[in-house]
Length: 286
Length: 286
DNA sequence: GCATTAATTAAAACTTTCTGAATTTAAACT
DNA sequence: AGTTTAAATTCAGAAAGTTTTAATTAATGC
Image (spheres, each protein chain N blue to C red):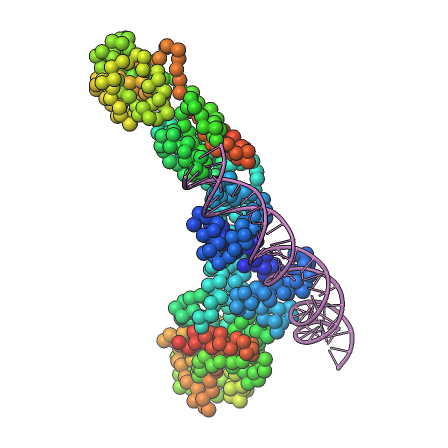
C-alpha cells in the first residue's frame, strides 16, 4: 500500500474537496481522482459517496481516515528516526568484558540517556576474545575489551580508560615483599584466558614461581572475598580492588615498571561507521 | 512510501537472509535487493551492512525495523476495518428528533456496542425537517425523525416505533372533557414547527379553538413542569409524558380515532447503502 | 433549464518496479 | 593462499503502475 494515497485521503477529508486537495498536494485533479479510485479498489470498499459533488466520505471512509492518520504517524516516526542530526540513532548491541560491565555500564547508560536519546542498547558480557570474534561476525556493534598486545587488524580501537594494576593482600600481611607473600599465601588469579588475565600473568610470571600455589577464580568479587579471609593475595586493576576493599585488605600499588590495563572500545573497521564509533566512545569518556 | 518494502524489510530481519526472504515473499532475489536499495535511498540511510554476506542490519536498520512493524500494524488495522463481515463498520453521524434522543439513544448505544462493535457514532439533535435536510446534504448518515405526511422522495424510511398521543392534565382537572379543559386551562403546545408539533396541531385544531390561550414551549420537560403546577394541559407522545409524570398529573389516552406518531429511521435513498441502513435500523428495533 | 464548476474517463507519456542473465563478492573449502 | 560455492548486486529490457492532457459526464447555482 502506498502511504501517499493515505496522505491524499487525509487531505481530501480535511479540505472537503478533490480540487483544493489536489492544489494543496501539487497534483492534477485526475491523478488524485485515480489515486482514490485505486485505493478504493485495493481496499475493496467505497470511501466516497460520489452522488455528491464534491464527493463525501462514507461512514467507512471516515473511519479509514482515522486509521490512515495512525499509519501516517507511524511513518513519520520512522522517517524521523532517519534524520541525520549527528546523534547516535538506532539499536546498538554492545559487549563488555566482565569487570568493565559492572563499573562502566551504569555511567554509560546515564550518559547515553542524556546524549543519545534516540539510541537504544543491548548488552552482553564475555571475554575480550569472544567479544572481538562477535564484532568480526557482525553479532555486536561495539565492545569494551582490554587492549591486547596483538590487536585484530579488522577492528579499530578507541581508548576509554587506563587502570593501573594493584595488589590486594590481607591486612596482616601488609608490607611483605611479593616474594615473601608468595611463600606464605596462595596467589588468586583472575581468569588467565581473559584479556586482563593475560596481562596479569605476564606481570606476575617472574615474581610468582610456584605455579602450584596459584588458584584460578572467574569472579573478582569471589577473589576479593578470599583475600579478606586471609586465603591469598591477588593482582587486579585498582578500581576493581577498591570496589570490594574494606579494612581487612591492604592495597599495594604496583611500582615496578608501572603496568596498566587499557579498556578500549573495539568496533569493526569501517569507514561508514566512523562517526558512530566516535559518538559511541564519547558516551564512555564523558 | 510503499508499505510493501517495509514488509520485505521485516521479513529479511526475521529470516536473516535475502534469498530466503525472497522465497517467502514469492519474489526474485534481484527485485528484493532493489526494493531494499530504493528504500535506503528514500530514507537516505544505510539499513544494511553489505560487507557481510548475507548483509546484516545496521543499528539504525534494526530500529527502523521496529518502526516498520508499527506502520504495518496500523496498516493491518486499516485493512481489517474494510473487512465486509456483514457488520456495521465506520463512523456514522446520526440525527435525533429531540424527544427521541432522550429515550432511544441509551438503548441504541448499548445495542450498538454489542452488535456493531466496529462502528462509532456522532449524534446531533434537531427538528425533523432540519435533520432531513442534513441527510439530503450528506451531513448526516441517518436520522430518527417523526414520520411526516409528505415524505421526501430522496429519502427512505424505516419504522422504528409507533407511539400514541396522550393528554397530560393537572390531577385536579381529571375527568373533564377537552372542551371544559380548554375553557379553564391554557394548552401547552410543543413546537408546532416540528414533526410531532404538526401532528399535535392537526389533532388538536378542531378541539382547541381559542388560539390565544395556546402557549408554545420547546421543551417537553418544561411543559410537563407547567402541567404539574396546574398552569395548563398538553398533548404529547405517551412515552414522553410517562417519562416526567408524577402524582400531580393525570394521563388521559386519546381515544378519538387513535392518532399516533411514528418514529422512523430516515436515510438517503441509495442502493449501495441499503444493507447498512438495514443493520442500522436493527440496532433500534432490537 | 442553462451555465458553471467539479469529478471521471481514456489514451499517451512517463516513472517505477520487476525479470532473467551476467557479474561481483563474501565465506567456505580444499 | 587459491578455488569453489552460494548469495547479493547490476544491467538491460519487459511489464506494471502513475500521471498528464484532453474530452466527457455529472451535480449545483442562478
